[in-house]
Image 1 (cartoon, rainbow, N blue to C red):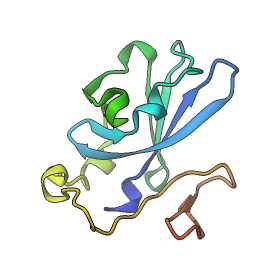
Image 2 (image 1 turned 30 degrees about the vertical axis):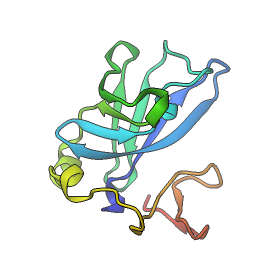
Image 3 (image 1 turned 90 degrees about the horizontal axis):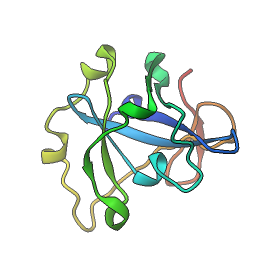
Image 4 (image 1 turned 135 degrees about the vertical axis):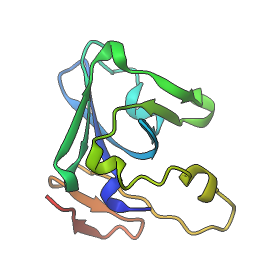
Length: 135
């Protein structure tokens, strides 16, 4: 997994605050993320969803009527494939067969990145150690 490809997804809440999550490009115009990042009780479905790739200084804004899923695991899986235009500089690095070559198996090591609201563009790995994410 290339950590530069981790996208920061920002959705608006009905109380004018935001919710932040992550996504990862897995194919042509497809971003895998958790369903709860896009759809949740307090989500303001009249506002756009913003997706950023900080290392590339790239941003995509998806208008509410354009939020579509190529796959929706619904509440059972809490995963979606979000249809999303991937900026060219990011798309050049996307491994098109990642879902075929990176199969999830028991006992496999894994890592995660996120955008906690501690400081802008910091990431936390599974060790709990924060490191500065490129700005």
